[in-house]
Image 1 (tube, rainbow, N blue to C red):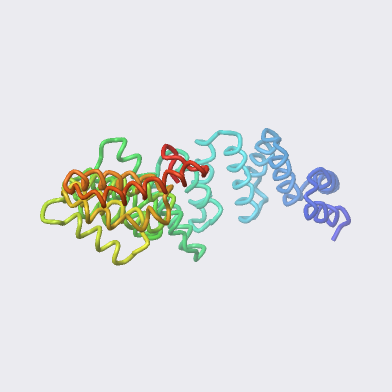
Image 2: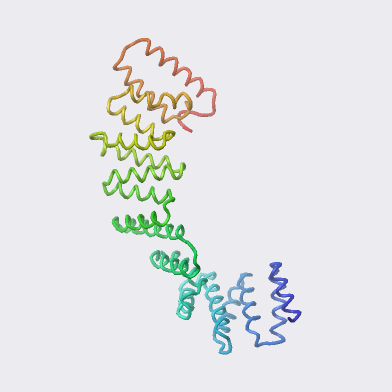
Length: 331
């Protein structure tokens, strides 16, 4: 192996692009027919941000008749990458398509085309290229596919295509059943369609998958309540959730609110009493609890009860006044 090639390899391993440039330039000065050295230089120019030089050299190489199929493919790939980094996306797509016409299994081109189609908002084509890459490489890319389906769903929703949006979200959730964002989005779509039970199940699922989305999920659940309050459907679904997840505080607050609205203030208080004693700065639970107390007091004038409530409120007030938490800020 010539000394200049050895230096180029060593510099490449050390990520010293200037040294690689110097070594490869020495090679092509000695042998101007060395296509591999020129391909290396085109890559160096691109990585240094000299896109004009890289594109020009790659175009020249792609037109040479003495390159073998592998070298030709590398030249086109470098040219496509240069166009892409330079912002010439249409030109980049044209070159990648040429590569794929010659070799449908080119993994680099398939990956680039999936990304480019996503950038162009052509999510269906992005999914197609992603799936082809998955088959070629033997990789599971379901999570990435789920992201593309969700982005397609958002695009369809903005275009007023509600049914197509829901179908895309279902495909996304099938690809990635653990995606809380997708479950939440599909729940919102089902709620808009008036499928209240399906929406609630998806909201529960989202809350269980990601606690950071629980607040949004329970806002959706609460929005379903007026439509499911008849015959105890809403209460039954909340209780089923609590049977599976007894520590789900948001679900217990939702149940307490439901009971309060139905005039069952004592039951509402029973659901929340332990929560507000153990976590008195949970302001949502506290507000519902105090509402229940007020409702109960209007029904029951037992003075001993009022004394107990007053003592409890004094205890909570003392805790809030001596901590960094406040009713307005919540947990």
